[in-house]
Image (cartoon, rainbow, N blue to C red; front, side, top):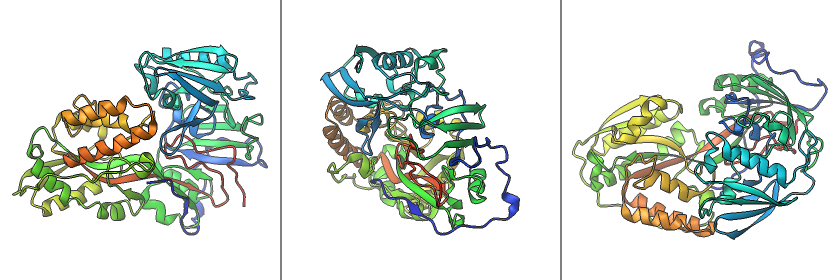
Amino acid sequence: MSRRPARALGAVLVLPALLTGCFAGSPPAADDGADRLRLALNFPPVAALSPFSDDAVLASRMGVTETLVGLDDAGAPVPQLAESWTRPDDRTALLELRDGVVFQDGTALDADTVVGALEAAAAAGPAPRAISGVGLTARAVDADTVEVQAAAADPLLVQRLASPGLVVLSPAAYADPAAPDPVGTATGPFAITELTGDSTATLRANRAYWGGEPALDGVDVRFTADPGARTAGLRAGELDVAVNLPIAQLPSLTDLAVLSTPLPRLVGLFLDTADGPFADPGLRAAAARAVDPGPVVDGVYEGEAGRAVGFFDDGTLAGATRPTPQLPAPADPAGAAVRLATYSDRPELPEAAAVLAEQLRTAGFTVEVVVAEYATLEPALLDGTYDAVLGSRLYLGDTGDPVGYLATDLTCAGTYNIARLCDPGVDAAVAAAGALTDPVQRREQAARIEATVLGTAAFVPVLHERSRTGHAPGVTGLATDRFERRLVTADTAVGG
């Protein structure tokens, strides 16, 4: 699916006064008369917003930190702190830095500061996922040019620099090299002035921002894991923006707007090709033909998802031709017993599993559904304990590359190969695609490999998920980022 415009849902639900005050512990605004945004994010920071942790995306979404490059909707690199780049050879990138960038503490961005940031990331234990095992090195060619190298040929070297774990901070941030501090040391349109544990953050506008002066005076952030509390705060007028709203509560947001952004996140049915009933290609084909995504998309997800025809959405493949998969001849299920597992961490999955299980029963299978928390299930998902797994998978990861997903999830040596598919032809095609440097060619090959894998019926696509960000009607300028790395921008504003 390509990026789609924001969709407004109806008009405001007026709630009783008893809902007000549920965010009474929110950080106070620096100036009650200022234009400030009240934002609720869904994950609390676990490492004081260090970019070398899972907190990296939080600081990025708040508009605090920035990387050398960004990613467009198809996962191709676009300029950010680096204005341009060249690839003099297959393991090297030369990046020209943007002029006039100043860190929030007044330090100027130059090649030495970038090299220091990248060296700290490469030396971190563990290093950010995007560069783990890459052997990344960096050196200043001159004041405005940075050379970045990998230990071996790497077609994705520039894309790796878009990872939120590779943000560039001023030298003052690295007093503790293992846990850089982004408070007042980043380059984004907003600077953190106060971080209160894992509960709140207060931000001020960075008036010297290279991309133009921010429209807001600041942002008051609340980290709220409970989706019901985020929704209630938004409805009560105590929040201006809240992310990851539950689908079931969207109909109640009758006077608020919802940004529904397609994500590179796939929900589908993995069938164990190594053991059990689905070792038989004919039974896999029978299961694939039995699955109808429509009732899941329209019923369980209430239309807040896009029906999947393959692993990748149209935005990821960016116009690449998708061959039609050729399934094996179906066999008669004849009551074959199937254990179908899913996890409760994503609230829609258990209900979706129940719908698909009934479809398989109608086709002649005998189906048992197992539901548990993901952390409990993961080892069994990977070792073939279950015949089928309904899962949700982010398929572009840190680099925005579909070939990387295929290598990880669908090759003999893949580290997340739930279908336990081991096809030498698929492995050879993935290896050949991985050696390509042209992103268009990589996407074309990914589309061909997708058709080959779907033709084995090892995987049955169901839907592509969307993010759901609710906001007050007067809020404008939020980023609709399918990688969920950006949200608050210099253009974000509140008002009528």
